[in-house]
Image (tube, rainbow, N blue to C red; front, side, top):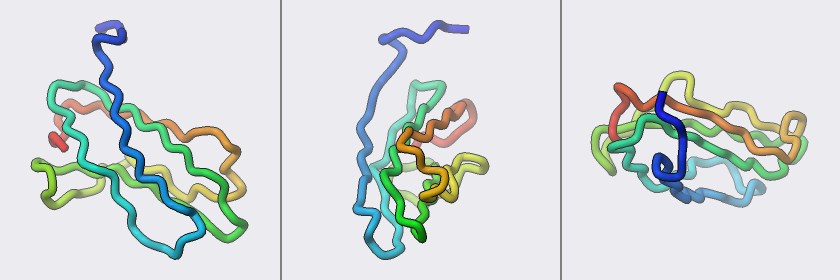
Length: 102
């Protein structure tokens, strides 16, 4: 196993933050090129939810940037609500072996 050092990490800001008081909708970040990386770490700050609001964050993949993206099975932060949003980030890690580039 290769140790994780600053040489092995590329930090990308994919801020897709939106006002949670908005009506339902889909909000996208920019494409992330994963070429040359073995893992992806997602850190999601969901903000404060109202009593009736919820968020679902889905991680998708595609062979080309701007192509047709499909959800990665098991890679979603689902039903983030006022009852489970405790002001801490939601964190997920994905092994990129065998995954699509974007």
